[in-house]
Length: 473
Image 1 (cartoon, rainbow, N blue to C red):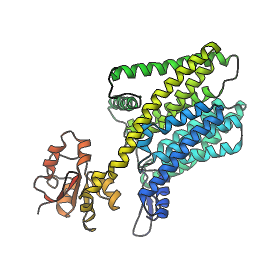
Image 2 (cartoon, rainbow, N blue to C red):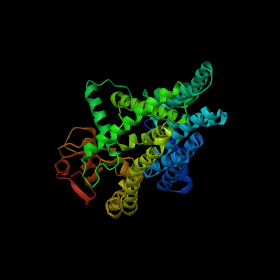
Image 3 (tube, rainbow, N blue to C red):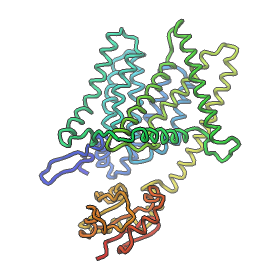
Image 4 (cartoon, rainbow, N blue to C red):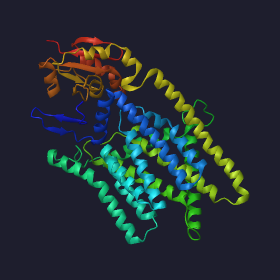
Protein backbone atom coordinates (compact mmCIF):
# COMPACT_ATOMS: atom_id res chain seq x y z
CA UNK A 1 0.00 0.00 0.00
CA UNK A 2 2.97 2.34 0.47
CA UNK A 3 3.80 2.02 -3.23
CA UNK A 4 7.01 0.10 -2.50
CA UNK A 5 6.15 -3.20 -4.15
CA UNK A 6 6.77 -6.44 -2.25
CA UNK A 7 8.88 -5.26 0.64
CA UNK A 8 8.98 -5.31 4.43
CA UNK A 9 9.19 -2.21 6.61
CA UNK A 10 10.74 -2.86 10.01
CA UNK A 11 9.97 -1.00 13.22
CA UNK A 12 12.90 1.37 12.70
CA UNK A 13 11.64 2.31 9.23
CA UNK A 14 14.15 0.20 7.29
CA UNK A 15 12.74 -1.07 3.99
CA UNK A 16 13.82 -4.58 2.96
CA UNK A 17 12.68 -5.96 -0.41
CA UNK A 18 11.82 -9.63 -0.89
CA UNK A 19 14.50 -10.73 -3.34
CA UNK A 20 12.70 -13.93 -4.28
CA UNK A 21 10.73 -11.78 -6.74
CA UNK A 22 12.16 -9.10 -9.05
CA UNK A 23 11.04 -5.60 -8.04
CA UNK A 24 9.52 -4.02 -11.15
CA UNK A 25 6.08 -5.68 -11.38
CA UNK A 26 5.16 -5.38 -7.71
CA UNK A 27 6.35 -1.76 -7.66
CA UNK A 28 4.28 -0.92 -10.74
CA UNK A 29 1.25 -2.78 -9.32
CA UNK A 30 1.47 -0.92 -6.02
CA UNK A 31 1.76 2.44 -7.79
CA UNK A 32 -1.23 1.81 -10.06
CA UNK A 33 -3.30 0.37 -7.20
CA UNK A 34 -2.74 3.59 -5.28
CA UNK A 35 -4.14 5.50 -8.26
CA UNK A 36 -7.17 3.28 -8.93
CA UNK A 37 -7.72 2.17 -5.33
CA UNK A 38 -7.72 -1.60 -5.88
CA UNK A 39 -5.12 -4.30 -6.61
CA UNK A 40 -7.45 -6.33 -8.81
CA UNK A 41 -8.35 -3.31 -10.93
CA UNK A 42 -4.67 -2.37 -11.14
CA UNK A 43 -3.84 -5.88 -12.38
CA UNK A 44 -6.61 -5.62 -14.96
CA UNK A 45 -5.15 -2.35 -16.22
CA UNK A 46 -1.67 -3.85 -16.53
CA UNK A 47 -3.04 -7.01 -18.22
CA UNK A 48 -5.20 -5.14 -20.73
CA UNK A 49 -2.55 -2.56 -21.67
CA UNK A 50 0.19 -5.21 -21.92
CA UNK A 51 -1.99 -7.47 -24.08
CA UNK A 52 -2.95 -4.67 -26.43
CA UNK A 53 0.67 -3.55 -26.75
CA UNK A 54 1.81 -7.14 -27.37
CA UNK A 55 -0.67 -7.73 -30.21
CA UNK A 56 0.15 -4.35 -31.74
CA UNK A 57 3.90 -4.89 -31.44
CA UNK A 58 3.85 -8.31 -33.11
CA UNK A 59 1.46 -7.30 -35.91
CA UNK A 60 3.02 -3.91 -36.56
CA UNK A 61 6.57 -5.22 -36.16
CA UNK A 62 6.15 -7.97 -38.74
CA UNK A 63 4.30 -5.59 -41.06
CA UNK A 64 7.07 -2.96 -40.96
CA UNK A 65 9.80 -5.56 -41.31
CA UNK A 66 8.23 -7.70 -44.06
CA UNK A 67 5.72 -5.38 -45.79
CA UNK A 68 3.47 -8.45 -45.87
CA UNK A 69 -0.02 -7.66 -44.53
CA UNK A 70 -1.44 -11.26 -44.49
CA UNK A 71 1.56 -12.62 -42.57
CA UNK A 72 1.45 -9.76 -40.06
CA UNK A 73 -2.31 -10.17 -39.49
CA UNK A 74 -2.06 -13.97 -39.22
CA UNK A 75 0.69 -13.66 -36.59
CA UNK A 76 -1.31 -11.17 -34.56
CA UNK A 77 -4.49 -13.27 -34.72
CA UNK A 78 -2.73 -16.47 -33.64
CA UNK A 79 -1.42 -14.66 -30.56
CA UNK A 80 -4.71 -12.86 -29.96
CA UNK A 81 -6.87 -16.01 -30.00
CA UNK A 82 -4.47 -18.42 -28.30
CA UNK A 83 -6.05 -20.00 -25.18
CA UNK A 84 -2.69 -19.89 -23.42
CA UNK A 85 -2.63 -16.10 -23.84
CA UNK A 86 -6.11 -15.71 -22.33
CA UNK A 87 -5.06 -17.89 -19.41
CA UNK A 88 -1.97 -15.85 -18.65
CA UNK A 89 -3.33 -12.36 -19.34
CA UNK A 90 -6.25 -12.62 -16.92
CA UNK A 91 -4.49 -12.85 -13.58
CA UNK A 92 -2.42 -10.97 -11.05
CA UNK A 93 0.84 -12.30 -12.46
CA UNK A 94 4.00 -10.94 -14.07
CA UNK A 95 3.53 -12.67 -17.44
CA UNK A 96 1.49 -9.96 -19.25
CA UNK A 97 4.05 -7.21 -18.66
CA UNK A 98 6.99 -9.55 -19.13
CA UNK A 99 5.79 -11.00 -22.45
CA UNK A 100 5.25 -7.50 -23.86
CA UNK A 101 8.73 -6.40 -22.77
CA UNK A 102 10.19 -9.61 -24.17
CA UNK A 103 8.78 -9.27 -27.69
CA UNK A 104 8.94 -5.49 -27.68
CA UNK A 105 12.72 -5.72 -27.27
CA UNK A 106 12.81 -8.57 -29.82
CA UNK A 107 11.16 -6.51 -32.58
CA UNK A 108 12.92 -3.25 -31.71
CA UNK A 109 16.23 -5.09 -32.14
CA UNK A 110 15.16 -6.29 -35.60
CA UNK A 111 13.91 -2.82 -36.51
CA UNK A 112 17.30 -1.38 -35.57
CA UNK A 113 19.08 -3.98 -37.70
CA UNK A 114 16.88 -3.21 -40.71
CA UNK A 115 16.42 0.56 -40.35
CA UNK A 116 19.72 1.37 -38.57
CA UNK A 117 18.05 4.13 -36.56
CA UNK A 118 19.43 4.70 -33.07
CA UNK A 119 16.03 5.27 -31.45
CA UNK A 120 15.11 1.62 -32.12
CA UNK A 121 18.33 0.53 -30.41
CA UNK A 122 17.61 2.75 -27.40
CA UNK A 123 14.07 1.35 -27.07
CA UNK A 124 15.40 -2.20 -27.34
CA UNK A 125 18.02 -1.56 -24.64
CA UNK A 126 15.39 -0.03 -22.35
CA UNK A 127 12.90 -2.91 -22.66
CA UNK A 128 15.65 -5.53 -22.43
CA UNK A 129 16.97 -3.99 -19.21
CA UNK A 130 13.46 -3.88 -17.70
CA UNK A 131 12.53 -7.50 -18.53
CA UNK A 132 14.80 -9.21 -15.91
CA UNK A 133 13.45 -6.79 -13.30
CA UNK A 134 9.98 -8.20 -13.99
CA UNK A 135 10.95 -11.88 -14.23
CA UNK A 136 14.43 -13.26 -13.64
CA UNK A 137 14.29 -15.41 -16.77
CA UNK A 138 14.25 -12.14 -18.72
CA UNK A 139 18.03 -12.11 -18.29
CA UNK A 140 18.19 -14.29 -21.41
CA UNK A 141 17.31 -11.16 -23.42
CA UNK A 142 20.65 -9.71 -22.33
CA UNK A 143 22.18 -12.59 -24.31
CA UNK A 144 19.55 -13.08 -27.02
CA UNK A 145 19.37 -9.56 -28.42
CA UNK A 146 23.16 -9.05 -28.53
CA UNK A 147 23.43 -12.39 -30.37
CA UNK A 148 20.80 -11.23 -32.85
CA UNK A 149 22.77 -8.02 -33.36
CA UNK A 150 26.01 -9.94 -33.76
CA UNK A 151 24.67 -12.54 -36.20
CA UNK A 152 22.16 -10.60 -38.31
CA UNK A 153 23.24 -6.96 -38.52
CA UNK A 154 25.03 -5.61 -41.58
CA UNK A 155 27.73 -3.64 -39.76
CA UNK A 156 31.42 -4.60 -40.05
CA UNK A 157 32.45 -7.40 -37.71
CA UNK A 158 34.33 -5.21 -35.23
CA UNK A 159 31.42 -2.79 -34.97
CA UNK A 160 28.96 -5.67 -34.51
CA UNK A 161 31.07 -7.07 -31.67
CA UNK A 162 31.34 -3.64 -30.05
CA UNK A 163 27.60 -2.96 -30.31
CA UNK A 164 26.67 -6.43 -29.05
CA UNK A 165 29.01 -6.12 -26.06
CA UNK A 166 27.77 -2.62 -25.20
CA UNK A 167 24.14 -3.77 -25.56
CA UNK A 168 24.71 -6.73 -23.23
CA UNK A 169 26.62 -4.66 -20.66
CA UNK A 170 24.02 -1.87 -20.45
CA UNK A 171 21.05 -4.22 -20.25
CA UNK A 172 22.47 -6.63 -17.67
CA UNK A 173 23.69 -3.85 -15.36
CA UNK A 174 20.37 -3.18 -13.51
CA UNK A 175 19.68 -6.83 -12.68
CA UNK A 176 23.32 -7.37 -11.64
CA UNK A 177 23.01 -4.48 -9.18
CA UNK A 178 19.83 -6.10 -7.81
CA UNK A 179 21.64 -9.43 -7.44
CA UNK A 180 24.59 -7.76 -5.69
CA UNK A 181 22.18 -6.23 -3.18
CA UNK A 182 20.62 -9.67 -2.67
CA UNK A 183 24.01 -11.30 -2.12
CA UNK A 184 25.13 -8.61 0.34
CA UNK A 185 22.01 -8.91 2.48
CA UNK A 186 21.10 -12.59 2.31
CA UNK A 187 24.03 -14.31 0.54
CA UNK A 188 21.65 -15.54 -2.17
CA UNK A 189 21.10 -14.72 -5.84
CA UNK A 190 17.56 -13.46 -6.21
CA UNK A 191 16.50 -15.21 -3.01
CA UNK A 192 17.91 -18.51 -4.25
CA UNK A 193 21.09 -20.46 -3.76
CA UNK A 194 22.80 -22.94 -6.05
CA UNK A 195 22.52 -26.64 -5.21
CA UNK A 196 23.92 -29.77 -6.85
CA UNK A 197 21.32 -32.53 -6.49
CA UNK A 198 22.27 -36.18 -6.69
CA UNK A 199 19.29 -37.05 -8.89
CA UNK A 200 20.10 -34.69 -11.79
CA UNK A 201 19.18 -37.31 -14.39
CA UNK A 202 15.80 -37.97 -12.84
CA UNK A 203 15.04 -34.27 -12.52
CA UNK A 204 16.03 -33.70 -16.14
CA UNK A 205 13.65 -36.45 -17.28
CA UNK A 206 10.90 -34.92 -15.15
CA UNK A 207 11.55 -31.51 -16.73
CA UNK A 208 11.40 -32.91 -20.26
CA UNK A 209 8.27 -34.93 -19.50
CA UNK A 210 6.42 -31.97 -17.97
CA UNK A 211 7.47 -29.60 -20.75
CA UNK A 212 6.38 -32.04 -23.46
CA UNK A 213 3.01 -32.51 -21.76
CA UNK A 214 2.43 -28.73 -21.77
CA UNK A 215 3.57 -28.21 -25.36
CA UNK A 216 1.22 -31.02 -26.37
CA UNK A 217 -1.77 -29.02 -25.13
CA UNK A 218 -0.83 -26.20 -27.51
CA UNK A 219 -1.37 -28.39 -30.57
CA UNK A 220 -4.78 -27.68 -32.14
CA UNK A 221 -7.56 -30.26 -31.97
CA UNK A 222 -5.82 -32.28 -29.25
CA UNK A 223 -8.49 -33.56 -26.86
CA UNK A 224 -11.19 -32.39 -29.27
CA UNK A 225 -14.52 -34.20 -28.92
CA UNK A 226 -14.30 -35.72 -32.43
CA UNK A 227 -11.78 -38.54 -32.11
CA UNK A 228 -11.65 -39.85 -35.68
CA UNK A 229 -7.87 -39.58 -35.38
CA UNK A 230 -6.22 -40.54 -32.05
CA UNK A 231 -4.50 -37.69 -30.24
CA UNK A 232 -1.14 -39.44 -30.45
CA UNK A 233 -1.47 -39.64 -34.23
CA UNK A 234 -2.42 -35.95 -34.42
CA UNK A 235 0.67 -35.01 -32.40
CA UNK A 236 2.88 -37.12 -34.68
CA UNK A 237 1.40 -35.72 -37.90
CA UNK A 238 1.60 -32.06 -36.82
CA UNK A 239 5.11 -32.44 -35.36
CA UNK A 240 6.38 -34.12 -38.53
CA UNK A 241 4.73 -31.44 -40.68
CA UNK A 242 6.41 -28.64 -38.73
CA UNK A 243 9.81 -30.35 -38.84
CA UNK A 244 9.39 -30.95 -42.57
CA UNK A 245 8.51 -27.29 -43.12
CA UNK A 246 11.63 -26.20 -41.24
CA UNK A 247 13.84 -28.63 -43.16
CA UNK A 248 12.46 -27.45 -46.52
CA UNK A 249 12.97 -23.84 -45.47
CA UNK A 250 16.53 -24.66 -44.43
CA UNK A 251 17.17 -26.15 -47.86
CA UNK A 252 15.79 -23.02 -49.56
CA UNK A 253 17.81 -20.80 -47.23
CA UNK A 254 21.11 -22.57 -47.95
CA UNK A 255 20.44 -22.45 -51.68
CA UNK A 256 19.39 -18.79 -51.68
CA UNK A 257 22.23 -17.67 -49.45
CA UNK A 258 24.73 -18.38 -52.20
CA UNK A 259 22.96 -16.27 -54.82
CA UNK A 260 21.10 -13.45 -53.10
CA UNK A 261 20.62 -11.56 -49.89
CA UNK A 262 18.51 -13.35 -47.30
CA UNK A 263 15.18 -11.66 -46.50
CA UNK A 264 13.44 -10.96 -43.22
CA UNK A 265 11.56 -14.28 -42.91
CA UNK A 266 14.66 -16.46 -42.30
CA UNK A 267 16.01 -13.84 -39.89
CA UNK A 268 12.82 -13.92 -37.82
CA UNK A 269 12.82 -17.72 -37.92
CA UNK A 270 16.43 -17.87 -36.73
CA UNK A 271 15.71 -15.41 -33.94
CA UNK A 272 12.63 -17.39 -32.85
CA UNK A 273 14.59 -20.64 -32.69
CA UNK A 274 17.33 -18.89 -30.72
CA UNK A 275 14.68 -17.51 -28.33
CA UNK A 276 13.18 -20.94 -27.70
CA UNK A 277 16.57 -22.58 -27.18
CA UNK A 278 17.93 -19.96 -24.76
CA UNK A 279 14.66 -19.83 -22.80
CA UNK A 280 14.59 -23.61 -22.34
CA UNK A 281 18.29 -23.72 -21.39
CA UNK A 282 17.77 -21.11 -18.67
CA UNK A 283 14.65 -22.92 -17.46
CA UNK A 284 16.28 -26.35 -17.26
CA UNK A 285 19.37 -24.99 -15.47
CA UNK A 286 17.13 -23.22 -12.93
CA UNK A 287 15.04 -26.37 -12.51
CA UNK A 288 18.08 -28.55 -11.88
CA UNK A 289 20.30 -26.33 -9.75
CA UNK A 290 18.22 -23.59 -8.06
CA UNK A 291 17.29 -24.07 -4.40
CA UNK A 292 13.75 -22.97 -5.35
CA UNK A 293 13.21 -24.45 -8.83
CA UNK A 294 10.51 -22.98 -11.08
CA UNK A 295 7.26 -24.85 -11.56
CA UNK A 296 7.02 -26.29 -15.06
CA UNK A 297 3.50 -25.28 -16.05
CA UNK A 298 1.71 -23.44 -18.82
CA UNK A 299 2.31 -20.09 -17.12
CA UNK A 300 6.07 -20.62 -17.10
CA UNK A 301 6.19 -21.67 -20.75
CA UNK A 302 3.62 -19.18 -22.07
CA UNK A 303 6.25 -16.59 -23.18
CA UNK A 304 7.33 -19.08 -25.84
CA UNK A 305 3.96 -19.09 -27.62
CA UNK A 306 4.62 -15.91 -29.67
CA UNK A 307 8.05 -17.32 -30.63
CA UNK A 308 6.41 -20.48 -31.98
CA UNK A 309 3.85 -18.36 -33.85
CA UNK A 310 6.58 -16.22 -35.41
CA UNK A 311 8.53 -19.34 -36.36
CA UNK A 312 5.50 -21.11 -37.85
CA UNK A 313 3.98 -18.18 -39.78
CA UNK A 314 7.29 -16.87 -41.14
CA UNK A 315 8.26 -20.41 -42.06
CA UNK A 316 5.14 -20.64 -44.22
CA UNK A 317 5.82 -17.19 -45.69
CA UNK A 318 9.38 -18.12 -46.64
CA UNK A 319 8.17 -21.44 -48.10
CA UNK A 320 5.64 -19.64 -50.33
CA UNK A 321 8.24 -17.07 -51.33
CA UNK A 322 10.45 -19.82 -52.78
CA UNK A 323 7.74 -21.63 -54.71
CA UNK A 324 8.02 -21.64 -58.51
CA UNK A 325 5.34 -19.50 -60.19
CA UNK A 326 3.19 -22.46 -61.43
CA UNK A 327 3.05 -23.93 -57.92
CA UNK A 328 2.67 -20.70 -56.00
CA UNK A 329 -1.13 -20.41 -56.24
CA UNK A 330 -2.02 -23.97 -55.10
CA UNK A 331 0.68 -23.80 -52.41
CA UNK A 332 -0.75 -20.50 -51.16
CA UNK A 333 -4.27 -21.96 -50.96
CA UNK A 334 -2.92 -24.96 -49.05
CA UNK A 335 -1.04 -22.78 -46.58
CA UNK A 336 -4.11 -20.57 -46.04
CA UNK A 337 -6.05 -23.70 -45.05
CA UNK A 338 -3.17 -24.82 -42.83
CA UNK A 339 -3.24 -21.50 -40.96
CA UNK A 340 -7.04 -21.19 -40.89
CA UNK A 341 -7.66 -24.53 -39.16
CA UNK A 342 -5.62 -23.83 -35.99
CA UNK A 343 -6.84 -20.22 -35.94
CA UNK A 344 -10.47 -21.40 -36.00
CA UNK A 345 -9.82 -23.94 -33.24
CA UNK A 346 -8.01 -21.46 -31.00
CA UNK A 347 -10.64 -18.75 -31.53
CA UNK A 348 -13.55 -21.05 -30.61
CA UNK A 349 -11.71 -22.48 -27.61
CA UNK A 350 -10.67 -19.03 -26.37
CA UNK A 351 -14.20 -17.65 -26.80
CA UNK A 352 -15.62 -20.54 -24.76
CA UNK A 353 -12.95 -20.06 -22.07
CA UNK A 354 -13.57 -16.31 -21.96
CA UNK A 355 -17.30 -16.81 -21.45
CA UNK A 356 -16.63 -19.31 -18.68
CA UNK A 357 -14.22 -16.88 -16.99
CA UNK A 358 -16.79 -14.09 -17.23
CA UNK A 359 -19.59 -16.22 -15.79
CA UNK A 360 -17.74 -18.28 -13.19
CA UNK A 361 -14.42 -16.56 -12.55
CA UNK A 362 -11.17 -18.44 -12.04
CA UNK A 363 -8.87 -19.30 -9.17
CA UNK A 364 -9.15 -16.96 -6.20
CA UNK A 365 -11.79 -14.87 -7.99
CA UNK A 366 -14.06 -17.79 -8.91
CA UNK A 367 -17.75 -17.28 -8.23
CA UNK A 368 -17.84 -20.40 -6.07
CA UNK A 369 -15.29 -18.92 -3.66
CA UNK A 370 -16.76 -15.44 -3.68
CA UNK A 371 -20.32 -16.62 -2.97
CA UNK A 372 -19.33 -18.98 -0.18
CA UNK A 373 -19.03 -17.95 3.45
CA UNK A 374 -15.39 -19.07 3.54
CA UNK A 375 -13.91 -15.67 2.68
CA UNK A 376 -16.14 -13.83 5.14
CA UNK A 377 -15.16 -16.28 7.87
CA UNK A 378 -11.46 -15.61 7.15
CA UNK A 379 -11.99 -11.85 7.25
CA UNK A 380 -13.82 -12.19 10.58
CA UNK A 381 -10.77 -13.74 12.28
CA UNK A 382 -9.44 -11.18 14.80
CA UNK A 383 -6.34 -9.26 13.75
CA UNK A 384 -4.35 -10.53 16.74
CA UNK A 385 -4.98 -14.20 15.85
CA UNK A 386 -2.02 -15.81 13.97
CA UNK A 387 -2.93 -17.55 10.73
CA UNK A 388 -1.67 -20.88 9.35
CA UNK A 389 -2.77 -22.08 5.91
CA UNK A 390 -1.96 -24.43 3.07
CA UNK A 391 -2.67 -21.61 0.59
CA UNK A 392 -0.94 -18.39 1.79
CA UNK A 393 -1.59 -16.59 -1.49
CA UNK A 394 -5.37 -16.87 -1.07
CA UNK A 395 -5.29 -15.48 2.47
CA UNK A 396 -2.84 -12.70 1.57
CA UNK A 397 -4.87 -11.79 -1.52
CA UNK A 398 -8.09 -11.18 0.38
CA UNK A 399 -6.91 -10.07 3.84
CA UNK A 400 -3.53 -8.39 3.24
CA UNK A 401 -2.25 -10.55 6.13
CA UNK A 402 0.77 -12.81 5.66
CA UNK A 403 0.01 -16.26 7.17
CA UNK A 404 2.38 -19.07 8.11
CA UNK A 405 2.52 -21.74 5.42
CA UNK A 406 1.56 -25.34 6.14
CA UNK A 407 3.57 -27.57 3.84
CA UNK A 408 3.71 -30.46 3.43
CA UNK A 409 0.46 -31.75 4.93
CA UNK A 410 1.21 -34.84 6.97
CA UNK A 411 -1.01 -37.75 7.99
CA UNK A 412 -1.30 -36.66 11.62
CA UNK A 413 -3.20 -34.04 13.57
CA UNK A 414 -1.70 -30.57 13.44
CA UNK A 415 -0.38 -29.65 16.87
CA UNK A 416 0.69 -33.17 17.84
CA UNK A 417 3.98 -33.15 15.94
CA UNK A 418 7.31 -31.63 16.89
CA UNK A 419 7.68 -29.13 14.04
CA UNK A 420 7.69 -25.39 14.63
CA UNK A 421 4.27 -25.07 12.96
CA UNK A 422 2.84 -27.78 15.24
CA UNK A 423 4.19 -26.06 18.33
CA UNK A 424 2.98 -22.67 17.15
CA UNK A 425 -0.53 -23.95 16.38
CA UNK A 426 -0.92 -25.72 19.71
CA UNK A 427 0.38 -22.89 21.91
CA UNK A 428 -0.53 -19.59 20.21
CA UNK A 429 -4.26 -20.12 19.54
CA UNK A 430 -3.58 -19.80 15.81
CA UNK A 431 -6.29 -20.33 13.20
CA UNK A 432 -5.74 -23.12 10.67
CA UNK A 433 -7.23 -22.12 7.30
CA UNK A 434 -7.53 -24.98 4.81
CA UNK A 435 -8.33 -24.45 1.14
CA UNK A 436 -9.75 -27.79 0.02
CA UNK A 437 -9.22 -27.14 -3.71
CA UNK A 438 -5.50 -26.62 -3.13
CA UNK A 439 -5.34 -29.89 -1.20
CA UNK A 440 -7.16 -31.75 -3.99
CA UNK A 441 -4.75 -30.36 -6.57
CA UNK A 442 -1.70 -31.35 -4.49
CA UNK A 443 -2.48 -34.73 -2.92
CA UNK A 444 -4.23 -37.73 -4.44
CA UNK A 445 -5.11 -38.90 -0.91
CA UNK A 446 -6.24 -35.42 0.17
CA UNK A 447 -9.39 -36.59 1.98
CA UNK A 448 -7.36 -39.01 4.13
CA UNK A 449 -4.83 -36.31 4.94
CA UNK A 450 -7.61 -33.83 5.75
CA UNK A 451 -9.27 -36.25 8.17
CA UNK A 452 -5.95 -36.99 9.91
CA UNK A 453 -4.88 -33.34 10.01
CA UNK A 454 -8.12 -32.07 11.57
CA UNK A 455 -9.00 -35.04 13.79
CA UNK A 456 -10.18 -33.66 17.12
CA UNK A 457 -9.69 -29.98 16.20
CA UNK A 458 -12.36 -27.39 16.92
CA UNK A 459 -14.19 -26.47 13.73
CA UNK A 460 -14.93 -22.75 13.52
CA UNK A 461 -16.21 -22.81 9.93
CA UNK A 462 -16.56 -25.39 7.17
CA UNK A 463 -18.16 -25.60 3.72
CA UNK A 464 -17.32 -27.10 0.32
CA UNK A 465 -14.61 -24.47 -0.30
CA UNK A 466 -12.59 -24.71 2.91
CA UNK A 467 -12.52 -24.84 6.68
CA UNK A 468 -11.15 -22.94 9.68
CA UNK A 469 -9.89 -24.90 12.67
CA UNK A 470 -8.41 -24.26 16.11
CA UNK A 471 -6.40 -26.52 18.42
CA UNK A 472 -8.62 -28.13 21.03
CA UNK A 473 -7.56 -27.08 24.52
